[in-house]
Length: 154
Image 1 (cartoon, rainbow, N blue to C red):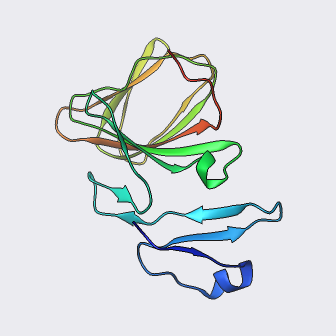
Image 2: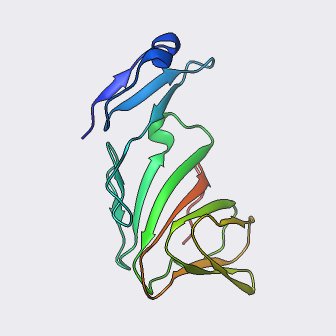
């Protein structure tokens, strides 16, 4: 686990934390923001202070920013899907914004399939059926937003 450092705004501007530190700052609303430091290289990225959740499919989810960090509206997650694997095919009432970090994928959005790779951004509208399928040669890694407190499918 990383070292958690909480400092005020002025000190934060002057402070350069060591790799692995989790830093916070107090917002005008009194909330404390968080910085997560990445450890490792793709495709085995992890973040200090984040315990990943493994799925039976071989996929893995890291919640980088969420309700436990004081986020009131948005959650940011990093997922990996093994070569040839896929996310659950689903539709729900919240939106997703996705950025592919490494690997290639086929993305089902509604009735259309799109090929995507590193740097591509994907928007999934509320109520839209969607699924990501990793290419056959390398794991897929992507960032995905979701709404805090959303109703979970299933």
